[in-house]
Structure formats: C-alpha cells, structure tokens
Image (cartoon, rainbow, N blue to C red; front, top):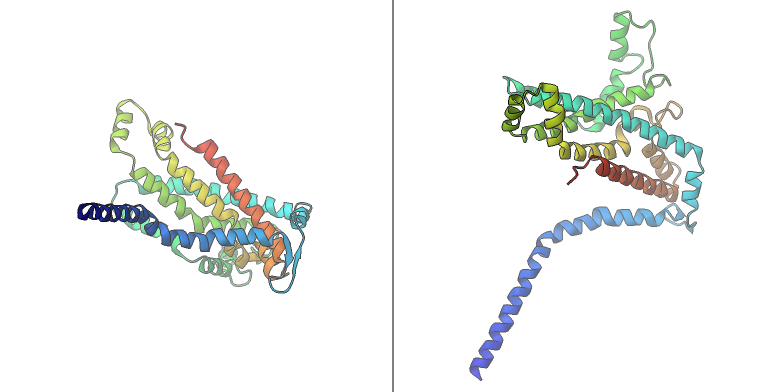
Length: 304
C-alpha cells in the first residue's frame, strides 16, 4: 500500500511539473501579449466598432451601419485626399531610397572619419518631428525666413515668397522637409544590410571580372533585398499615415493642396466631432496600408 501511495504521489508531482513546464512559454510572452491586446488589438477593434455609428463618443450613438463608408467613397474630396496622400508618399519614399541607398554605400566604405559622418547624417531621424517642422517653418517664413533672405541676396528672386502659403510651392516644400526628416531610416538599414554582405562575395565578383555596377546590381542588391523590402514597407506605411510635419507646416493648405488623409481624419474627429466618419476613414487607411504591404511582399520578396 505504501509503495502504491508513493507511486501515486510521484506521478502527481511529475504531472504538475510537466503542466508548469508547458505553461512557462505563456508566462514569458504574457506581458507582451497583454500590451499588444491593450495597445493594438483593442483600439483597432474599437475603431472598427465606432465606424458603424454616428457618434460624439459621449451622449450620441446612432447606428448607421455602412452609411459612413458609403458617404466617404461618394465624397470627391476624400478621393482627392487619397490621391494627394499617394503622391506625397510616393515622392517621399522614392527620394528616401535614392538618398538612403547612395549614402549607405558611401558610409559602408572603410575610410578615416567615416564614423563621424555616420553620426551626423543620422541626426535628422533623431530630431522630434515637431522640432523639425517648427525649424523649417521658420526657415521658410515669407518675411524673415533664411530661404528668402539668401535668394534675395543672390538676386534669384525679386520679392518675398510664401513657400508654405503659395499653391505653387507648398506641396513640394512639405515633401522636401519630409524627405530630409526620413532618409536616415533607409540609410541606416541599407548600411546594416551592406555590412552583413561577406567580403568574400566582393572578391569572387572581382575575380570573375565584374565591374562596380554589375557587382551592385547582381550581387549586392539581391543580398540585401530582404532588408530593402522590409524598409520599403515600413517607410511607405509610416509616411502614408503621416500627420505631424504636414499639419504643423501647412495644416493641409493652402486650400487643399497638402490635405493628406491623416489631416482630414484629425479634422473630422477633433474639429467636427464626427468620430464615426473619422473611424471609418481610419479603417480604410488601414486596409490601404495592408494592401500596399501585401503587394510589396508579393513582388519584392525573395522567391524560394
């Protein structure tokens, strides 16, 4: 009897030990999972929920089903804002990759003082977006801005220009500021990818008679393609839903020349208190970003 009792206790202890061991992974991922649910999944689901209502989030909750979505897609202003956002995103991301790839290749060279230039060129990404926007708003001020002063002194213009208030210049000015702010992301990722490429590959290409252009196109680019794809997805999504710099520089003006979709979402929610419509717009933006990401992955990922 004693032996049987001892065997039962040992079996029970082993089962508890196995059970605790099986729970260990969930204990470790628990905090991150809880944070993900609270900060990402719940706000996303709640946003989808209120997009079916006409609400001010306090005392007005009128269920309107899909009317918010129907109204948005029938609004020509919304289509125009999506087009402006796509154009803005394309120009900014394309410039980021041109500048980032070129600088990444330059900074990958083993030359004296290259560490100093790496630190300097990454500074725009470290500055807060509010600071960047306010600095450039001062630089492009029509009365006392540095741009107008330099151009007037050089005789290139005859009168002060409102770079952020003129329909001819506002959009491109916002694009240029965004390019300056965001290129270090691509530069740093490209540099990291280039440094992961083995020197033996370069030596083998050189021995096979490949020039620098051929080495870059046929060896370097395929080697860092996963890095480029991930960076492209992140950069595109980030600037498609961007808000801070554009709002602080122009608030979507003059007229609607720089009225990207994030500014309209903000106005619908916090100026017109139409949270249902703003939520519906946010859901549409989410799916646009998702589609862009899927298309990138489909056409740019390495084929196995």
